[in-house]
Length: 252
Image 1 (cartoon, helix red, strand yellow):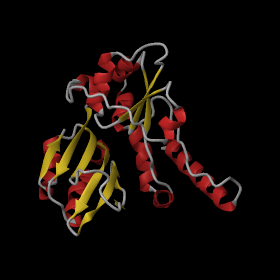
Image 2 (spheres, helix red, strand yellow):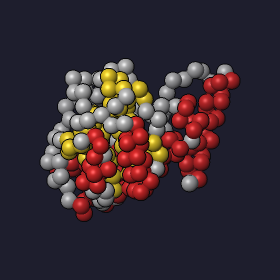
Image 3 (cartoon, rainbow, N blue to C red):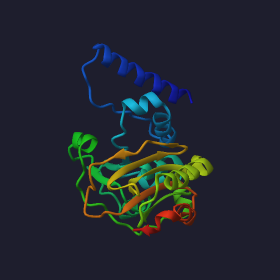
Image 4 (cartoon, helix red, strand yellow):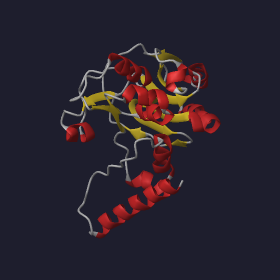
């Protein structure tokens, strides 16, 4: 709790100094955590503060994975598993010392099949701030056992029918209310019934739901709502039942 309070104070101080002209007009803030920091509470802290949520936009969560010791670290520490599962991008380190073992790649792909991948010997600035076009390794999606994932995993659903904003708020808000501690992160894109041609980017962390970020159009040819859930012990069927108004199906 004290660490999160320090983070909030630091961010406020940076924003105030930028507004006063004491700092250059920076556009990005990088928050670096310790090796075994639990990421979900940090994301929750940023989302729960109204002023920070208004002033800042979460661009990406980047997790470094040790190519040498990564598999053992994932086996031993639940925090490391959560870091890998919540990441938007996975950066493989120590690739100059060892080729990432296939078992590590498969474990990461099972935990987080939607993450972008990069290597530490690539351009680090691009890994931090740019898109990472590398092919996403595809392991067997549910290959990692519960003992090795600490109950943490991810799954995706597709919404074949646009939902009303009220039905969607009830579904996601109810999940956050009932299982917020285990709802590590939700992200995706959906179309609401009253705005079928203007989708919204959705983001939620534990008990907190971000306001929808309205897009000008669909980012690709797939014009179907889809959501990725990173959870601890939440059954996918429970999620599908909550979103029944959207005619959901599992998405692979």
